[in-house]
Image (tube, rainbow, N blue to C red; front, side, top):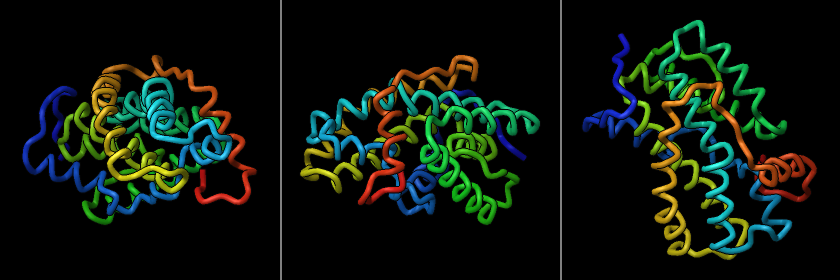
Length: 222
């Protein structure tokens, strides 16, 4: 049976290890294959070095998918079984492009499939933040630290994409993640908001995602 916890509760040792495993690059979600429109921004020259990448990721987290994902994680954590389908439809409708929809759906299906195989949980294929929120509920993990680590993992994936797209050394990459950590912690507070409070203002990021669909040659799927 699922164990529920308060959104701002801390993690126990086994919960911490579970979360670290779920959001590790080794967990088979295929996150490395997606750039969230960053590849198009790098090709345009909008994102070309550590400062511009940091600005881009800060916008993604605060004004784009980061905040939206945090709200969806919290909503899935609180949701009853009957609400999940509605949330899945909403999350899919929020995707601004075909590739962004495929990014969320593909990672979510891979994550859900692995969790079903490992734990026997009844988790449908849904966009990734919903699967994560639901898994946290079933595993007894509180929503807020899950969102904090998920946002940092999201930023880490995009920083690693940036290292493949522009001259960016390991130390500079880790410096970006260090400075973005407070942003991840702050934005994770949105787990307490409801779906009606979802809203984004990341137009340039969304446009890059749309334009990436016809970019050739390319490395990433989004």
